[in-house]
Every structure is written in C-alpha cells, then in structure tokens.
Length: 405
Image (tube, rainbow, N blue to C red; front, side):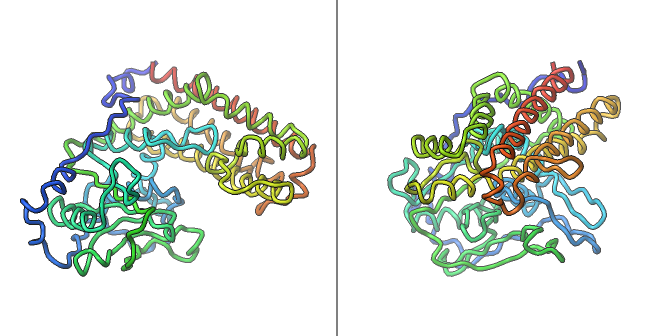
C-alpha cells in the first residue's frame, strides 16, 4: 500500500460523455463569424522538441492513436518530453497514451472510444470531438465545413488536427493547409521498421483529395489544465489496475478464455467456429472478419489474423513495463516495488515475444507458417502461453493493487 500513489483520482474512469467542442458551434454559425477571412494558406509554427544529434531511431511506436497524440502535443509545444537510450528517442506521450486508453492492458486486440476519451481528458482536453464525412454518422460534416473547421483549428486554436490516413496507418497530424484546405500538410515519423537506418527525422508532406466517405476529423479543443508528470504517472498506475481488473475479473475475461479454447480445437472445429461467428478469437484487430468465409479461404483467414497477435500483445505489455520504468524516477521510495513490477511485465511480454524464452510467436514463425499452426501440438503449446499470459496479468494486477489501494 503506497501513500504516494493513493492520492484521489484526478479523472473519473468510465465517464464517457464527450461534449461537442466550441468548434461545433463555430461551424453552425460560420457565416456570422466570417471564417472566409482566414488565410488561403497556413502552416502552424513548429514548437516541437529538437531531437539531439546522433539520435537515429524514433520509437518503437506504431499504434496510430498513440503517435497522433504524442505528435499533437509535441508539435504544439505541450508534450511530455523524450527519453533517450543510446541512439533511440522515445516519446513519453506515446507510452502515456498506450496506458491511459487502456490499450496496453487489453487481453486481446481490442480498442474502444471510451479509452480515447479518457486519454484526452487526462491530458486536459475535455472538449475534444470527432466529426465524420459519412452522412450516416451523427456528427456529419460536409467538405466545405470540414475545410473551414481545419482552418479555424489551425489558425485560431493554434493546434494541429488529426485526419487518419490509410497510407500513414501508423499515425500523422495535420499541421497546415494550402488552397483554402484543398491541400493539407501532414507531419509524421516513419515507423522504425520501415526506415531502419534513421527514422528520427519527421516527414512533412502535402496531400490532396483527402475528403471521402471514410474521412474523420478530430479536434482537441482548448487545453483547460495540465497534470504534472508525477500526477500523470499516479493516474496511470490506477489506470493499469482498473483495466487489468476488468480484464481478469470482469467482462473482458472471456477474451482470454475464448482465445485459449479456440487454439485447443482441431482445425475443422476452428474453421466451423469462425464461419459461424465471423470472429477469429485472439486475432489481431479483435478478430472481426469482413469478408466471405468459405472452406477454401477459412484457414488462410485464421492464419492471417493470428500472424501478428504475438507481436501486438508483446508490445502492449512492453509499454506497461515501459510506463513503470519511466515512472521510477518520480517514486524513489517505491524503487524495489516498481522494479519488481517492471520485471514482471517484462516476463509477461516474453510469454508472447519470446526473446529470452520460447514464446507464443516463436512457435509459428514470422511470417506465420500455416503448416506449423495446423499442428495440434504446436497450438497446444500456444494455448498454454495464453493461459500463462492470463495468469501473469492476474499476478500483475495483484501487485498493482498493493501499490494503489
């Protein structure tokens, strides 16, 4: 039990009630506000932290929401800073995003809008909102209005906006526009595995034809407050505890059980299960299949969904470990307890990643070997890994509860 971590919660988990930011009212009254007076072209000044010479690698970080959050804060001069290890640069904001959304603690490849709401609220942006180009969505925004909203956010709020790009699936932000919004200027870092020599320099590109039925626009609104890093870490410890509690003892427990049970089926049963439900238990992206499943493609689909599961899950627990590692300097009186937690989540990460021990992913190779995966003995060992992973999360929860309750 720890007094330094037991301070009252700053944020109320589960209070998912996003409000439309002022930008929504601005768009509804655009003519009165004469937004056409905004410049035809604008680039938001770069207030990001300069990366020291000699740094060659940025990351590892490829979850889009985390990069969008960290790029947004850093570019606008509101970031949490970097940690340098050798020639690696690691953004604290990405780790914080992975924890505060709950993503790093998920039992399977899941994600929820409630997690994003919690993240941005914790960072002090309570009026954030997403608008959509799809007219069937409640928060539909036409192309002319979306262009004006982008111009307003950049020029008046003096902040980037976020429009996810399929071609930049690892995350980018919009830092400017040209030709009254017909051209957008985006900012991002290449993933480390796509630019192994040096990905520590940001990329700036212009894009056109960006508005389509799948387009969404995220505007953060003004930042009302900013927690200190020590309070961010306190909140993060409680967030880890609360999310693991739901995963181990609550409604998400079933994802562990279904994942393990699926691997213990024979291949005929696995195919029948996926055809019946349209879901691949334990599969990347929640395992939801969006194509027709037949006897010819069923096994290919199952293998495809499981190919990167090990990497996804290993990286998630790596960021729990990384969050604890980063927090240690702020809680010197808890050095031994936090080191034990860090070691524990390294072990949890290893059950999936398997650098020091033979893990889940090493059983089937990278890329996946379908013939190995079809071997029932191989899958039985993978199922054992899932059980051990679940047990490790349960132990991690008990350790975290001792610190936070």
